[in-house]
View 1 (cartoon, helix red, strand yellow):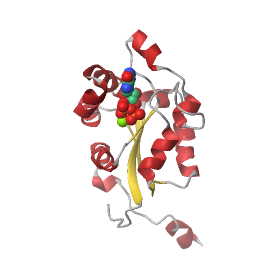
View 2: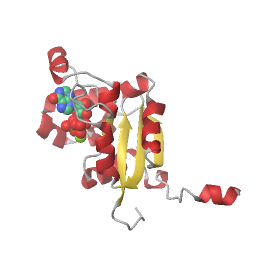
View 3: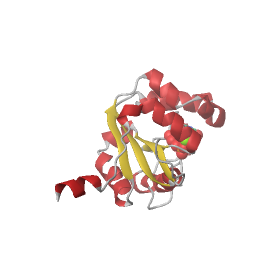
Length: 170
Ligand code: IDP
Ligand code: MG
């Protein structure tokens, strides 16, 4: 990242297969654009198991159990996803705030998970399925750096001044 201002951060968002299936790509992207965050990378991919395992690292198994990691990898390879690199002021924390808590049932209204999903851990556990919560967002600077590398080549992350286009047209 060439941006030297430490309050400007980049973070990774994945719109998981359930978000794509439900046709929520545009609405979710719109929320990030509306607060003024800059899209610096965007692609649709059908993840391989290898990539899914790089994304859901052993850390997830340590925190949530190997079972949850397995379910999340299965979920990620089940269909196309949209990977988004966002840039903005303290973007990592801001995006997590907009995404809401892990369990949609408990996620606050106004957050993406709270507004577009309502599944509970209890319901998912009873059915032995993962909690489908539409979206992933990096938790901290180390994860953001590592996860952006999983989904994007350096050349796919753009550096640009958002005002540049307007200035050259007029
Ligand atoms: P996060 O997505 O809010 O950061 P993590 O703890 O990193 O939450 O978990 C990664 C993903 O694994 C979650 O988004 C959710 O889909 C799933 N998950 C986490 N904990 C559980 C669980 O206890 N049961 C089922 N799925 C879970
Ligand atoms: Mg996480």
